[in-house]
Length: 412
Image 1 (tube, helix red, strand yellow):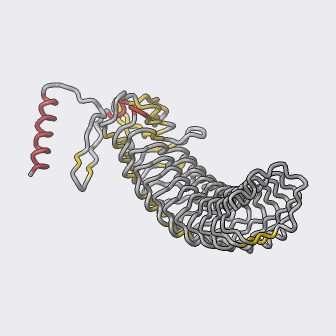
Image 2 (spheres, one colour):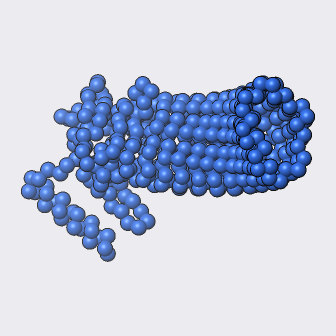
Image 3 (cartoon, one colour):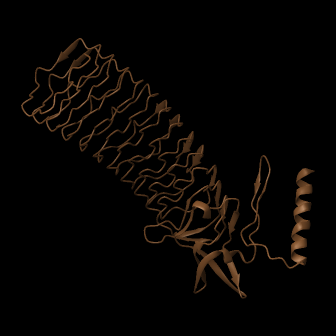
């Protein structure tokens, strides 16, 4: 009854405005919202007037949104615009909705052409938008989604299922700091040409679930900081992930503080050169299977397991570390690590071992008898606060080139 009265009241007001000749602003249209549903309104016939645009052939190319205060606006962009009796196809080319010009709700309708503008996304949002919906758009000229929803900190609903992403190469920072999103479903999207996924979900601190089923990652070369700071994620499913061309996994899961289950056993890491801080801060992980990792080309393992404070063991027996130069902080803060077998570690190229075992305060034995430390210059805090260590074999240590041993055994 309440909604019916609301509809009747709105109808009366609209009719009154029409008959009195008062013109309504094109985009100040509000969607009907109840507790469990949200209804998108129809766009007015002169919807395009609140945009800067150019007419190019049979297209109306939107260049920028003119509304100065759009915080309560619901914006619907249809696939066509009729101007002086001529119908034009709607094209979005580098349109940015940011700050006070970012509407509360935005729907990109069926038929809208999304056209990337150089290295910029066809459309991007950087403001207080809460709902975004994409219809069946023409995405044949959209090759990037770089920073598309970056810093949409109030975004809570995102509909992407109809979006054709088959030509997209780059989703760098696509959902960066979408702090209010609790779930993202990418399972129906075609990412077969995707190359860059770095920082894709970085700072999505409210995310509890990411659906990545059937996401094609065979061409991706960069996954650095992909889930960095996703502090509410509990688990991730990588069954369909192809990482055979990835070279950079820096900070990939850093700050995933609540994640309890992380199956990366099928990761192909044969081309990876950096695993720097890959699992840093995954303090709830109790098990981690990296036994199948091919680390032949890895150069940087700095902080790789730093602050994985619930890990009791990790099998690194298959690691080829012959090219690694930085192992600083590698196990720093692994305060529940009971044992670790590093007998087969090749450290001949390592120059930095600063804090490598810092605060591993449950470890009682550590056999480093095969460590080649010829090139190491920094051993500071190497065993600092390993307060339970009773047996330590350093018989092969060559400290000729070491310049810093500060606090090396402090707290042992």
